[in-house]
Image (cartoon, rainbow, N blue to C red; front, side):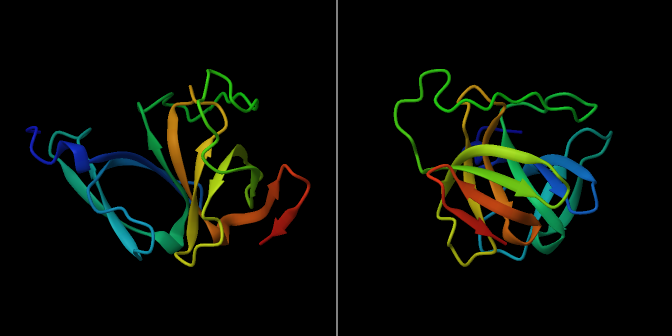
Length: 149
């Protein structure tokens, strides 16, 4: 791709509620939208797929595509790697499929159907995660308060 518009292109990994993982680039992902498109460049011909936010568990904005087998190694300590300031409330997100993610919850009460989570580990491959409210069983704030979904 040329450099024009490069700054608006996001490298995303969409985890769908059914367990499917879809990787690609998006220029139209935004909280509050009902859908967005992922462009895959892995095939001989580029293809685009429309993703419904209602079908999604979470969208991971990533540095790199990571491991192909889907296994993720996460550190759960906050501030590892010298994070300068905490960007939100320390939280643990528990998903319906049993996955757990530790991070800093931003605008968790936003009406857009989800909220942003910045990983606890600043060296994590995920830059930020858009968590869909309907895929969460609990959001525990590490100050002792819990919000069930």
